[in-house]
Image (spheres, protein in one colour):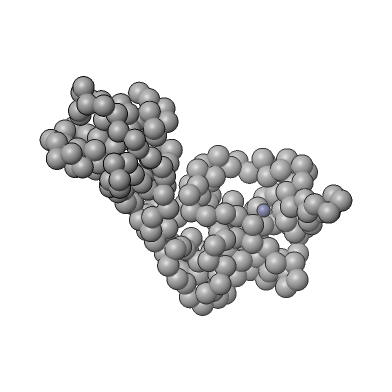
Length: 232
Ligand SMILES: [Zn+2]
């Protein structure tokens, strides 16, 4: 299986239109509001945009979507194996949940407070405090995001001693370890204030990063949060 998007495009094109010269093309990931993929021709050049939600998808899935797009563009028969493979991947529950989150994240949000519908941030903090800090950390103001903080999954505001977590995570489908990780990361910001090295702000100094690795489900949490936005 080819590795890059461009190679995958070329492979899918050759398989569908063997013998045809390779057209000029541009294929890249694009940040759509949901899973969406487009293809169009402008002045003889093909432009394919693949949803950034598919970034990191297995190679056969990427091949499948490019096959579908190119077949559509050239009115060729769409191979049912590829159609099924793509449908199966995007229909998986993890993917559906992610899409839902992204839609909310890129949309809007509501009121504030530590008590959410599913998770209570004070309780999350207390549990992490006991688990990682011997219960020694003073609890800052904990709040789900209101209308602001749309771009950020979570952040610590030292001026108001407040940890804000994006409200989109206050949902039953969101694994507890993802919330825990978001809060744990912000707790480390309390512990490791931003340092200045010359004129440069060191937000995640080595000591911070070392301590972050103590979180047992770090890899899973990062994987879950991938594509959802950035963490301050
Ligand atoms: Zn951070």
